[in-house]
Image 1 (tube, rainbow, N blue to C red):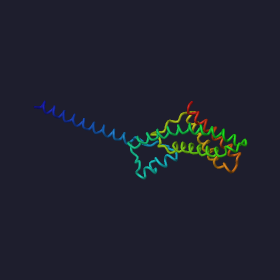
Image 2 (cartoon, rainbow, N blue to C red; image 1 turned 120 degrees about the vertical axis):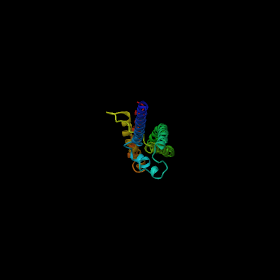
Image 3 (cartoon, helix red, strand yellow; image 1 turned 90 degrees about the vertical axis):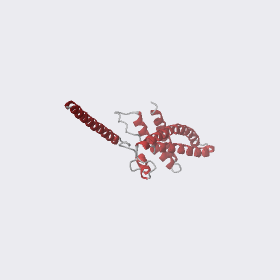
Image 4 (cartoon, helix red, strand yellow; image 1 turned 60 degrees about the vertical axis):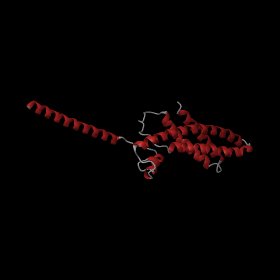
Length: 201
């Protein structure tokens, strides 16, 4: 009888301990899930404007901040950046064509004036569409660890600032100052072409 009582007591204690351990385990899992950060610590302004915790898409309820939506957003990000890359190559080709046409125009071939203006619109549409796809894409899940030294990604970002500024200047001085317009256009092309190339090496 005493043995049965002892066994029953041990059984109750074991069951209670197992139940408590199970509850502790589930609590730990829940805490780990709560620790998952759905957004990176740092985002560029344009990303934060749409995709941040208080971004436009969160406030309007179009894309509430949760794990399921973040998974969808990462797929959207991949598509946007792939399209950004494809448009980048087309824009680079358009810039080369525009440079050739522009050079002939500056040498006095006025028959290319209309073509130059049309190609200018093509370059602008391609460039600013590509820029928008990059600037407004959903942010990554986490920030990549900063690598020491200078790498291709850092170079690409620095060059992006240069060619964006040059593109704005090219359009601003189009009818104001031909020399500045030409210099800005060549700066935009050189920095843009280099930005495309550095990601390949």
